Length: 114
Image 1 (cartoon, rainbow, N blue to C red):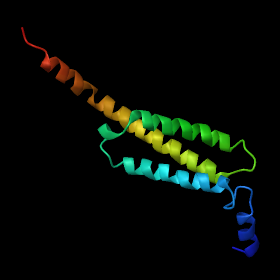
Image 2: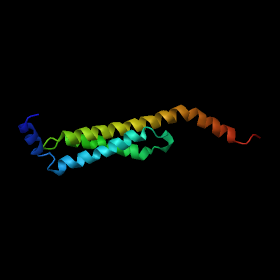
Image 3: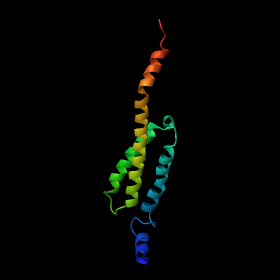
Image 4: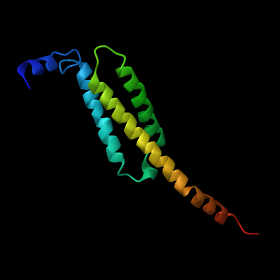
């Protein structure tokens, strides 16, 4: 990298001298938390939280394509926030679908036999 490229990055309107750089950078922690949640049993993953992350990721990814200056850090972090939220929702749906029959069996077994 040349010195001019480094200088251009630092002085960019969405560079490290502005909040437009640091806010998305810290938002990567949400992505890391979502990746960490993949290890959790699916029963402990919040559907509401996953839906909120997926929704805000999609909304803010769209927003980041419309603002000036172009902020690729904001776009990329929101795409990954949306992906982690959508993946957790997929896991929840798959778990519900796979265990749907077992729940019906448990309900019928607990009914008293007359």
